[in-house]
Length: 338
Image (cartoon, rainbow, N blue to C red; front, side, top):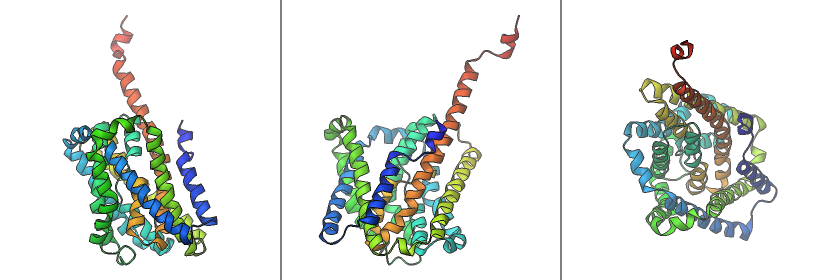
């Protein structure tokens, strides 16, 4: 099982095929214009459906645990950006300027929802709190991601004003999300019976954005301007960043007195970054010419977090199973009693 977690999932393979397709047959001319409109509609539909899926009961169930929620928000929007900023003297020589901007963008993104909750559930952690933390992170990201980027980036010409960026994200992402959530009583039953459609919209919209972003980047000379050393350095940077955040979240959770179930929720909700939110945000925040290079760190980090967190979740689960079995076993004195 652990070995299977180290293999790429199907969606990662789809992403690789999409990037390859964009590299060989990039969208150009009228097709690129039509693709841009289709992509905007698909992304709006994606966030509408995510709003419709969000259960209000899950929100209230997790809001009461404010210390855990604060720990996740701090990790996502403070610790990650601080690491990206503090490691700049090491990162800048290893990466191209756009890749380094992509690392900062990655650090400013909200937590993933589906993967984090799945890992917490697998590890037998606090699932209601994880649902609340991941959902709240997505909503806060609409406001905080542009603001954090505005602080981190010394030159925001590619992104524009953080306030303008918040406005664009609000119209294209947050508004459909809110409308979907308000319409949840009307559409939730329909969506629950059509899980395959939801998954298709989820993955299809991301693949469309990736294809459009990499098409622009390839035409602008992405691969000719990306040395192999920078790509290898990017993989190493993502690995170090993930390892640091995992270590800090585990250590801090224990030092702050959280129980094991809460620790699991903090570790997985705090250390993961959302591809579903990140790719559309990059498409909104950055110019088409640089968006492809900027989402490349996120795509690598996404696969890395799936592999590493999958293994860690299984270790947590085995520990939980051992504790359960020990609790059910009779005391040694009774076993040895004649």
